[in-house]
Length: 403
Ligand code: PMP
Ligand code: GLU
Image 1 (cartoon, protein in one colour):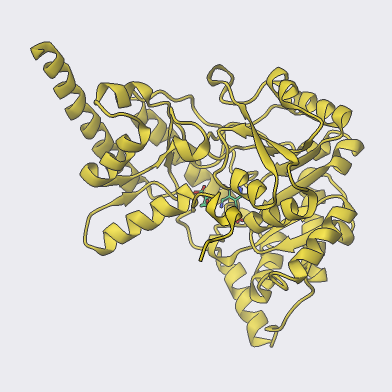
Image 2 (tube, rainbow, N blue to C red; image 1 turned 60 degrees about the horizontal axis):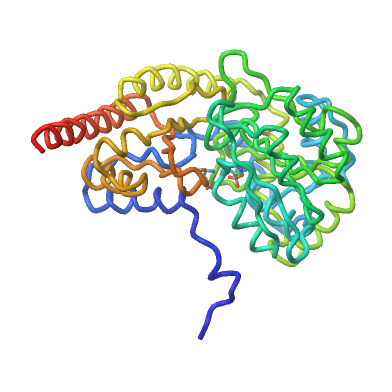
């Protein structure tokens, strides 16, 4: 029996598969350090767990409306008003099983066959595959190294065609950690308004910003931009709630209605218990979020300094998220590997460190290192990477001298 073409055409998530591989090796007794997953290592704050537990004890264990509990939608509306000064009605919000599923459902709702979606590279691994699963065509615009791996307005304009339906923006970015400035967002927004392009604004790393960097949603820049933007967000990163599977989309009423119809035939509703936890997350104390941010900031500073001692790794300091995305072409070449994938495989098998090759992010010159792990462990991992590179670098040099 043959599989459906759409299933054959997609590749598994590079981030999740490297994480699974590291776990498998650990279970076999290998001392592998995983810097692959983009998953905060902190526990979910207690008050959220208490609220979820209490809701179950109170018998809140049944289906909810497909688009989410009315009370949670109100909490999300308050969050968007408080943090982004964006006002929405409940009919403009859908609660989903993680931000990933908000994006998936959105593409199912807005894309017809062969509709094009512009995706800046480097991109988060799931965007192109989700677009393809909805029958769309990913169109890549390359972020420039000299421009913090962000796209320029000229490159964006050149990629627009009659079939362009949407643009995906992810700021702060996974995998680069870079943030678009208000001026850049304004230029991108003006173009999208002029050409009538939907903007999918993935703001999942909104709370993870360092050293004074700030987040603006492109939807904040004008009423027209708010109408043309679907804001995607969730609690996985900000509140360390990856396993709870909690996300949302906010935007045009017709789009949200279509997404809710699709959800009613696929997930029915996001997990009820999770939704009660999410109300506590949005309405409760935000100190735990700030404490986690400070811990990430401290890690970034330490890890970035350490990374700069590894030969052949070149990286600009990120402003947000919890990833470093060094250009490693020099290291790959000088250690004698054919490409970044072979280099990463050897790092895992010989140095026992799991990182994600940039290929999965459409960026084969780079490597993604997640610092969502405790500092001591990351520093040991970076020592291992440094030793691995230095040993091989030396041997390549002496081999060439010998030659
Ligand atoms: N967008 C980006 C850029 C991400 O890195 C992630 C990571 N999981 C998601 C969306 C999805 O998050 P979740 O489904 O856990 O809410
Ligand atoms: N978003 C995280 C990452 O990039 C989690 C894994 C995933 O969902 O892809 O590592």
